[in-house]
Length: 74
Image (cartoon, rainbow, N blue to C red; front, side, top):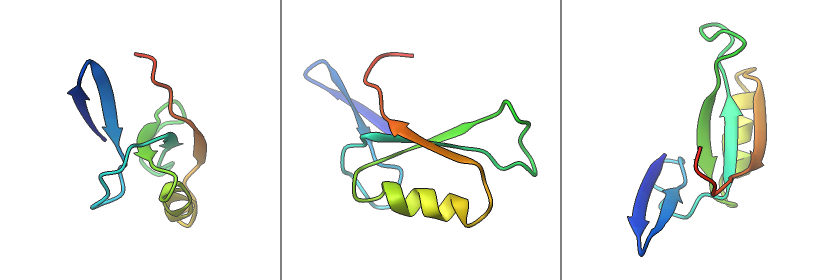
């Protein structure tokens, strides 16, 4: 996930390799073979790549949850 700031607003780039589009989706996932149930990793995705990233993770039997990316600070 890449974040950059311009004119006071944070910009988050899609996690798909080579993509520089704005991310609008959060793809939460974990590898159950190495992560405990409370551990989650997050990738971010643009509209064009959210399905690709979800399918990539699902094909490996990783639990995946996708939700709209919040612009609010954590």
